[in-house]
Image 1 (cartoon, rainbow, N blue to C red):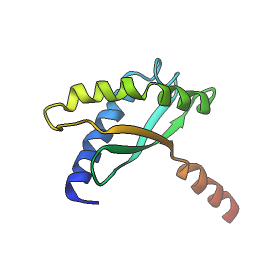
Image 2 (tube, rainbow, N blue to C red):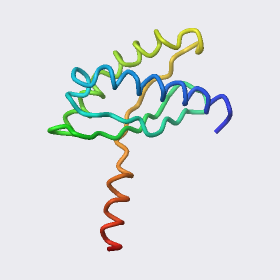
Image 3 (tube, rainbow, N blue to C red):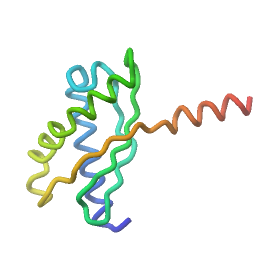
Image 4 (cartoon, rainbow, N blue to C red):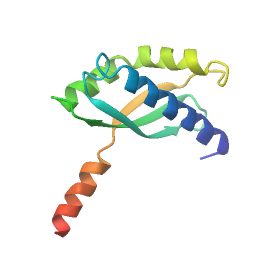
Length: 110
């Protein structure tokens, strides 16, 4: 990953974290969302956003709501970073299950 990709990924990760914290009830349906990783495409047009969901009644429902509102989230982020980026990348959300995987491995080792 280039330095530019890394810088843009960090800006998007920070702003998405703030956004999910402020809008946890409406967008995330009460779930606590943590942005674990953001990976940029080489042409900076797509951001793959990996998120962890905690504390929701239905994590899959919360994730689908986030995916359905990705255009609204992108618009909000573009308003904040408009002075830093020429074009806000398209946001593709993925569930980061590395915590669950690590927990399962830990239990198997015990």
